[in-house]
Image (cartoon, rainbow, N blue to C red; front, side, top):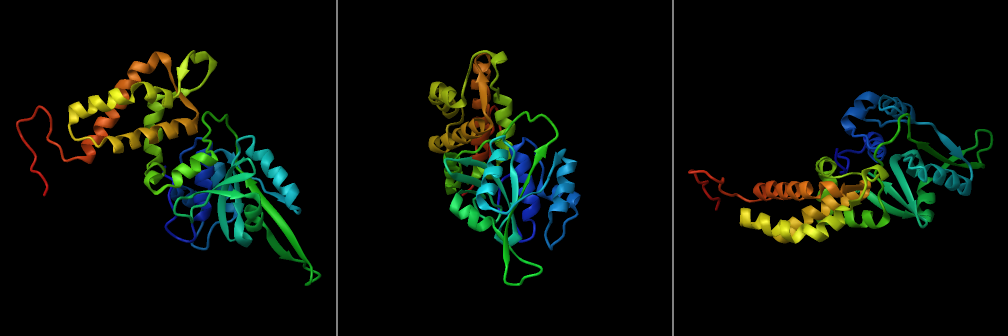
Length: 291
């Protein structure tokens, strides 16, 4: 599963649910969600998205508030429990996912944005969130509605994805968007390297501390083996692994430190081989070089 911009104007609902499920450690593609929801080119409503959420063992209730301060308070109650929230903004015209509040700023995943991840102050979110509905009996009266739909899991969440404001700013940089686009690949490799932090596992170290200790040695060794490694680009790969591990709250058990050195070296070697047109090792045949 990757984090990327939606390719059309009607699939924002499935994308929003996909992003919410990602926060709960569930991998689902928007195409599968669209099929389960039975949504069309006219878009998806909350009933269709609730049908899809149910297939992934989640409930999608609706919470409606009439006053922005009450709406904000109740929204925060869910976010602080690690529960992502779907919200239909722009007068119920576009689905997005709200995943966290940090010092008055809200982290949003909006599949219409090129970088997807956004940080909004409350004043902006409130303006985009509100829906104005005319009174059925008084055409001059207008009611303000603040609806949201928490994605509530029916299962114990093993791995929460927790973005920070600093992390969103990091991912929004053009040179780092490859991490979002290849998110599932990074997660797969990080889960092979790291484990959730628990008291039972004993002493552990973050991937950042691991790289502080061993990055230079690993890069030297891969360069020795491969001979054509762009060290700055290799560091970008390692930065991506570290970012994903930190976002998932994963660490390396101290007993697995040596194994992690070997694993990271292999990952970088495979990456370097894919980036360069290199000769196969221990082979009598040589590749024809590209011009």
